[in-house]
Length: 628
View: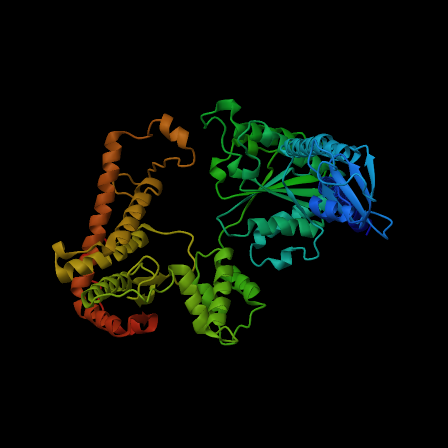
């Protein structure tokens, strides 16, 4: 309560200071307006509201006895009529001549009084215009310059300040129970919570509080949410900053921001510093063109010093997240800096179902929707993907005017997120439809017949995303490992579309529709040979090339000879040729079933898994397509 009231008082005082500054500005603006108005008034309002008349008329009436008094000041005349006590008219005589020379009789009854001309009004006006106005302009210019210089000075002073955002006082704190799945990661982070809440318990037995915990996992797996939940569980302040926010064009700025961030954290201890995407600043040193004077390396050096310089009892823990732990500097990962490493992988089926329940909890989900079946179909999806599916389902429901999210809507949203939206507006000729139907039927037939392939989920010739059609395979269960036989069946399945075109239309009639399939097949074959040791001649040998550091790839020689590179190329070619041969044998042995699925696609455009299985009843696996 004391902290909350202090924060409120600080906010109120800040608002009062802002209001005072605004009031001062308003008063100054009003004063300037008054001065300018006085100058304008003095320069334009020098007369006495007298009626202006012609001199000849004045002379005629004076000679006739209708004028009581004429006052002369220089060339200006003021006329007082008979039976009046003060002047009511004014006129002007010719310069260098007297009023008598203008026709006034010498024996006129009008009193003629000559006054010395007064220059006080013009002097005041001249003084205001020539002295005060320039002074006012100079003062305004100097005030503007001073304000600009002050603003630049404040900006320069704050350039090296940390831009970390402080969380922890919000009403809607995140805790571990708000995050579905990631049970092992939460268990590891629970120790961090205990370190922050009960440090003395560990210090009494001589245990040192860990200074850093590295969260490693693919994008969208909830690393940031877990860090916030850790702070919420420990009821500790939470400084959040991205690694890229440390790096600036000027050398030393990032290091200054690091110092400022850790100084703030120590003042708010116990607390958590969370650095997202730490690989932006924590990459291996010596890999850049700037050497030791590189701004990023200077910032990393400061982070290393600050983490190693924590005093015991500070109770400040650094959480960092990255999906590229392989490119981080070894000094950053050593014990004493990042003592713990928490791996956050893609959720399994059980976790996916729990995550889907969390995201659909506040949405009007129809009772017929089976989230368990949806979790089974979303193998390989991250928590962010599942959140996107739930959000797209709500958007589709609103677009269709449905008050509940039905099973069809969820399926459509899932397919939109996974393989892209349907492009029903694209017009295809009859030949293109037939070609696409044969192509997708070839994928489906080869994948259905080969024993190690996944199950066919859906086949469609409706363009989706950047593809002309889609044959969708979904594994029956989550897999962590893949065998050589499985990869070879996947390669044959990938080439099934191109081979179906070749069998139906001939080798010289194949089209560019298989470009994406061929690229993916080449990538998989290269992965098998180079990184997984799955070749025939190069079995159990890997030739992995580091892709994280560009400069090392330029300066270091390849780790294998030209002869080995030729063998790698031959192995990849053999895998692709074998896959094409097997796909060709399967399609030729089951041409009747290829035609059945082609006809169904031309009629319905989309064929679901149950109908695909029914159409393919009786397919056979030719011996020539089996692997020896």
